Structure formats: C-alpha cells, structure tokens
Length: 239
Image (cartoon, rainbow, N blue to C red; front, side):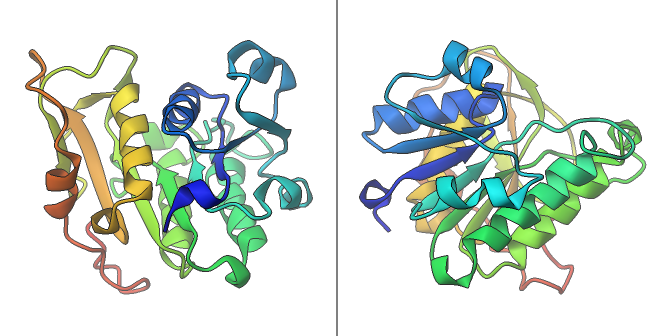
C-alpha cells in the first residue's frame, strides 16, 4: 500500500512519541492528520504542515471525521493511571482502541494499524500493573487489534528515554527481559512498519544496547527476522 495516496492518522500525535512520528512522516512527504485532545498542546508542538483534529478516543463520535479516508493509523495514546473512569488505562488503552477500530470498520480493511504498547504486558505481577491495571488493558488493546482483521504491527518499547538512539537496536519477541529504548527509535519503527510487509501481523519488543551507534538501523533485516503472530484467539501470539 502506498500511504502517500491518503492521510495517515497519528492518534496521540501531540504526545512525546506521537510528535516524533508526525515529524518523520511529514519529512517523508506524507499527509498527516494529528488527532489529540489539546488544541493548546497542538499549537505548541505541531508543525504547520500537519492537519490537527481535536478528538477523543473515549468518544467515538469525535473520531469519524478525522479518520475518514485515512490510509493508516498510528495509535500512540499516552494513558492515564486512574483505577477507573475517563483517565484510566481501561478507557484509553482498551476502550479507545476499540472505538478507533469500530470507526474504521470493515469498509477500510487493508488499512495498516500500528499500535504502540509496552513491554511486560503479559507479566501481570509486574509493578507497572498497579497503575490502573495498565498492563492488562494494554494487552486487551493489543488483542483487539490482532482480532480486527486489519493489517497491524504491535510495538512494545522498553523503558522510554529522550536520548538520541545510540548503540545497537534489538527487536525481540516473547515479552521477556527488559531494557531502554529511545523514543526516536520507537517513532522510526512506527513509520518504517507502515510500508514494510515483513512488519505486518507481528508483535515485538524493542531495546537498545548502550554504546556508540553502529550505523543506520537495518530495519529491513530486523523486520525480516520476526515471526508472525499466531491467528487471533489462539493465545500463541509471540507475547
């Protein structure tokens, strides 16, 4: 699919990862629709070339106009941490994903959905799950994407940093281990996945080794080394 034929929606595009995704897509000549809740934040951070839409993933009615005709979606919503209610992970990481998928609908089958999740989602005893069951709801959002019938990529970064992407980047599967990764590398993975057949239907974790950069990231090689997820519902996903 040539994503330049239609806009790409970056949901959560005013967030720290979303802003980097937006800038990278614009640099590649794409038309980008940034979807977020804060007009003030958009004015502060969004390049003039980006189209901004005020919408809320918790309210599907606000999503229909900005998602209409989009070629692809990058979902990079920053979650709340409340135990319940509108600022809970359940609302943003599961309910929000489902609302976007419902609005996209079967009529847009073939559109690529890139979901930014996180490591440890299969480890319910991890301390991060104390924040509104964040890991449980991230995993539920992942499962909704995998069951949607849309081409997808699920990206699970390690601990995020704002440092430039140094060292050797690793893509892993199985949700084991730990590690740090630069937000810039996560954004790059989102953008590269949109036009990489090898990145479709896969779930993977990301981490970087410390040390000097070893040259350009070999995205084609890294994606080619990933195993495809098992069919939705089998629970044999590489997770």
